[in-house]
Length: 341
Image (cartoon, rainbow, N blue to C red; front, side):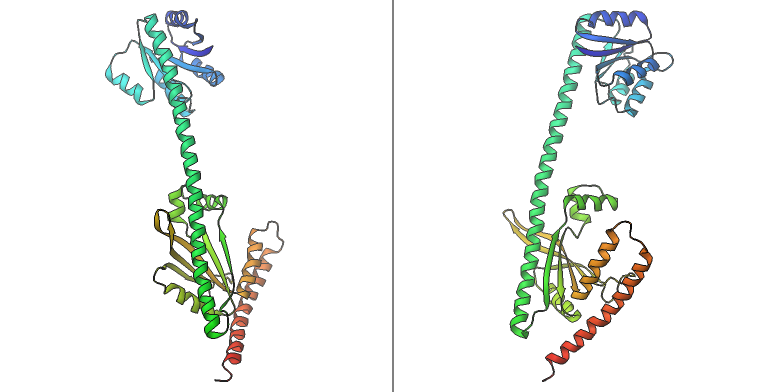
């Protein structure tokens, strides 16, 4: 049998309601709001309905409702007000606080039974409906995320294809390839959520679309610094590519020595629903820059590394040396290629 709690400071009212309902429910009683809160705390997972008087000593009905809202108990079972009050203002205030129904004094047995039964059934249906809607929303969100990931992957393929065409053209025209390799990556859902939370953004599909620009990314590894700028320029000149943002960490390295050219692009992809633009981050580095960044990344995410400050200083020295080496190698390349001109 379902358990209900009757709260009224008048013993006669408690006994009347108990007699009316004890054939259908296990009836617990309380003489005031303070006693009611103790029983609610003890039986909150067992109670199917609360019948609550408004005018009581120690703690009145409104005080009980405030505590229930604070403890999130109002979502667990319906609250029915038992009162001689008929004022519209009082009933409106109770309904605004989340009360389900009213039982007016003096009590009529059949009305009491039907109101309690209906309140429990309606409250149960409401909770089941909310749970079903929540589950459906979760399923739809998961399906949308899968579609979104597929779209991001399509954007990566689109950029990678364009870069490979440029590379092939360079190979034919200049007899050399401007980049050594392309590495692509798609952030995992866990990584996306972690970044949104770290930056203080709500974890929603809209936040992913509007606040993150590195969900889909490519790393283009070039042989020489001038190849980076040449390829980036040619790529951005294509009429269907939109350059959203450019960060040149080669000309303006980060304080730790990090060097790379970052382009945030808007790239068209073609789905069954039509053309859609997606954000893609493309990072251009030399082989030496990529080797340095890989090692620096390991330092950043590896725990319990000793003498971190010393390693950071060594990495900065290496970054400066790498910059000199890249341009020296580029100078040697030019001497080799243009020696007969």
